Image (cartoon, rainbow, N blue to C red; front, side, top):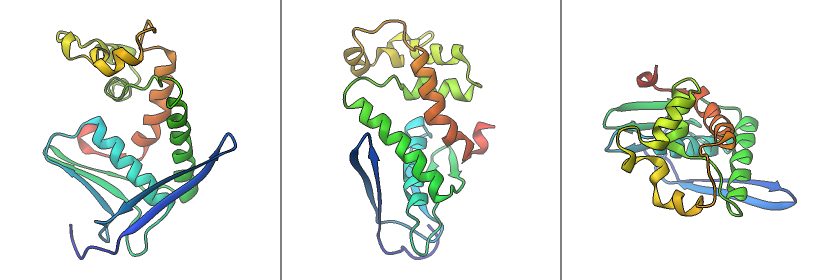
Length: 185
């Protein structure tokens, strides 16, 4: 956190999805000249990457005055940073994610973050995703055994399915393309 804290920045992204007006906003109250910092004292997890990515997209879509439109993560086991996107590209990504959120308000969206992360980091390996979903030797701790998923998906079989793999690529590929994290090489 080098330098002085900047004035708060209200980032607001507005779009239209199927003739409905949607808006996403966030108040960044702890910006510095080098951007936003997502810090947590634990090892980096997929949720940290996703949260920081969303903040990064909002900052790139609505750049703050006096600060880099950049976000980075700091955790107990290291640091990661996202490379800048042009405002138009950031807005397109936000629109895509908002469309998925909208879909999820009416039906379960087959995006399971831990399994998707394993799938993408292993070079789109179906086996890695299935291991994370089923839990390998510790099935009781598997993502597929999460009570919320079991309730929401109680009528669905054969998960993860093709929709899951498509969403894993759609959500995580842009994130990974803009991520600088030496731990993942």
